[in-house]
Image 1 (spheres, rainbow, N blue to C red):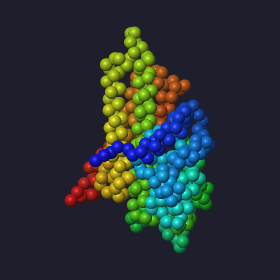
Image 2: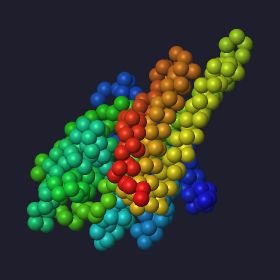
Image 3: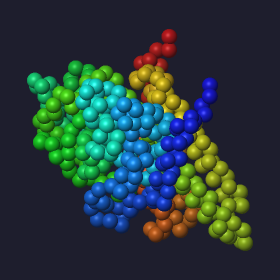
Image 4: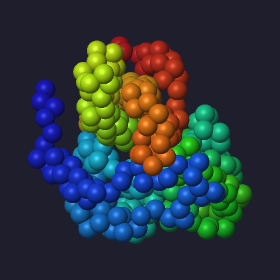
Length: 373
């Protein structure tokens, strides 16, 4: 089987490199250097450039103004990404297109592909550890759905126009509700992430959402959740590769006993181990992205490959930044140097992916829930 990237996928990655060139991917300052929220909004000028380069409409069908590309192309772009809601927005619009009502989905995705409105996803649940779909309840009331519950750590909550909220119906089903910013019954409370990014706690108190803005299709949340997780793995890979390059440049210039420390065996072995981590992160990422692009949601290969990618991404990105801090010595803690901000961002990605042990348990449980016969 040929896993070579297509010309269209490579063109998307090249366009992303052009847009993000010169943009600091670690541009959110350390929370230690700020008070309260880091910024009131994300970089709207950069967002407009992404829209102009058609990078906000990658997964959308051509009839919706998109490129018709898949999860692999999106992950290639995310690998180059800076701190904007590209993952959440793209995943949400792709889910609306795939699972939403045809007429309303076409109207929304066409505008979302141009960057207006901006979409994000509430995927952390009530505590960040429990399933997100169980944090909010949804009940039908005529032509409306009524939502109650709390979603914590919603990324870009203050800058997004719509938040996609998974909610359980009490009948074993999960629906996806599109909640507008400032909607009646939807209250935001400010939170600040490990990396200093502004998040929001979304509290829903009898929030009434029109049925046309609720996706009831089976498998929609499972598919969206898998794409979000795989995209986060792509962000972790891109961050890790930048950090390893930074460490390579530093150890090649820093001298002890008249020699660059990169020539010391202990340094070289640690750097080599982290290179292996990155290649494992890359291999498992593309396997998961390929499964999402080609397989139905909820099947054993998709769930298993996403779990493996999350294990390597969460563990790998943590090891990469820890080794980078060690090899930089005291210079790595200098607040005028970017490494400490990369470290904070890596920790945020690790926390959002969840502990590797949990996904190892998931892998162990999969044969029982998805018999191979």
